[in-house]
Image (tube, rainbow, N blue to C red; front, side, top):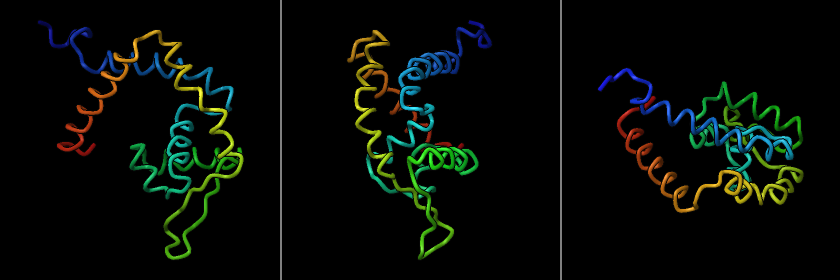
Length: 145
């Protein structure tokens, strides 16, 4: 077995699949004027309505250098507000605006529309998600990259 063959790499099928799936998201998210990373931010904020930048970065595994410009663009679209915490000005809190909250209603069909576009059985998607989550959790416990 050639260890350097592309077909023998773990990274390539993950990379290729990620590109395919995010490609299926693209037309759905264009309807909402969101990019895929912006959609991930909105998903978290729809869950909690308020989160600070550090918490958001931890959940999405993004550094502030990546997250800050994205949050700025979402703020320019009037989807969220960024405010400094009065108790500790180093902390920037993110809250949804009314427009950001209303967008949740428009986005509610995205998961089911995505599943339809993928033409993959629900059980397979659930198994894949769970397997990836378990592997990610194991790797994250042992490595901090």
